[in-house]
Length: 611
Image 1 (cartoon, rainbow, N blue to C red):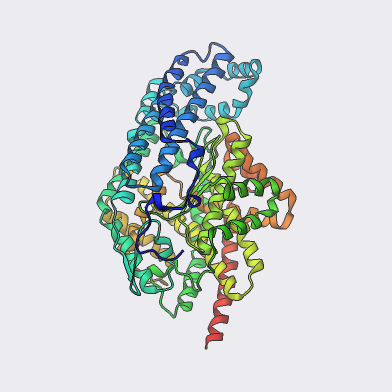
Image 2: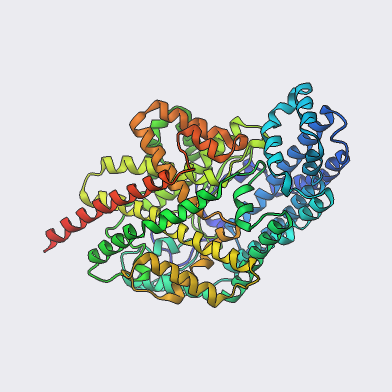
């Protein structure tokens, strides 16, 4: 995409660059009617309180009423949130998000009696009810998972309070988002007579610009924009950590980490702590692979490597439009068959799942968002390069995971754990990357594909495990009565990154250490480590599909369809991966090491050619 001196307004974007929110609500009037209906549905949920033991039919009606009404309310919240993500400074959308969040919180509070009452029913009663009422049988895994959480579910009164305060306790991320997306300003970059705007939607492209001066100026501008809010954002992050620590303590967990590993979505995660510990230990053991990578990059860049050069490609990315990338991704996913590719193609070319244009006020990053009965929408900002292709493939992995789960599972299981989410996204990247490497017409093209791969691995097997170490220390510090201040957060993150760079990178410690402000993921407790486990499992599964063909592809599709109907580790076992051992993460680092070998070969060959 050519550089623009100013980004267009949202209203100026071509329709094909925006997502089809009209499929969710035809107009804001329709949305407001749904909001009012959701608010009124609170009264439909309340009458079942204290009655779940009356009969199997009453229990089934209570569950179906709650899940159906909550799904409707979540669609209202999704619409408002998606609108705000594209125009973060729009006060009207900010108000809509607030209204929707309030209704969801009220509905959650109205249904807070469900789990305590279910836990008060003897297992024998639940078994008898399921035999008497076939409609209850689908809830068996939910009931069993709930029983496993019995020690941590409080009384009905306490659960009602916890549900009611979920909105204010969850407000820290909204405050941080407002400061980051609406109030934060960045210095533009001047380059060859052009003024290049620095924003959340352009920073990714600027950091891989061919000019090191543009990269430096953009990196510094972006970091300085965040540093201007360092104390505000330190306070919001501390509030978020304290909020989760409070909930973990209230529910009787030994630590915030223990609660995060046990609880996710409706049915819990049940992740053993050993999975988290294995990841951090394996990551630290393989830091020498990363040190070698930085050393090779430094050699390729003339003996000097600075913080802002870390993401810079050694060769320019081939230019690729959104539509060319969409076709490429469809080809790369063909080993999964028509069952996978055809709905993905419809979403890309007909149903407008993707919002990919750049506009003023659009927030940073990329995500997939949807619910049962909606499109699995994709948010991103497009640049004509392999990095955007990779991002699109990644988010399509999430969206296709959502598509198959929601097509297959009832409402109670129509989502999936964050632990498995990053498997599906990274799987798509691995599959498409393998095709691009096979078809690479020149060494330069192969190096460009490897550069995209390293960008992906850098984020998921370097930055995210580093953030996981950082995050663990934050929670431990708060749990011991300590505080999180901006100087501490900046200094500690800079130290952890310095360890990962192994002395091969020249550091601007304050700007590097400010990186924690770039990651809204830290407002989702202990999410970041799952990126690393995800990329490891994904690359192993992609290798299996490419080598074994249809049997492995079928196992993978069965995994996508499982949703919350099984625990996440069991879902991965359906696909053929056992995350209870360090082996999948070791395989992930083996893939990285092999790519570092290829990088060294290409760099040495190029240096010999240019001498």
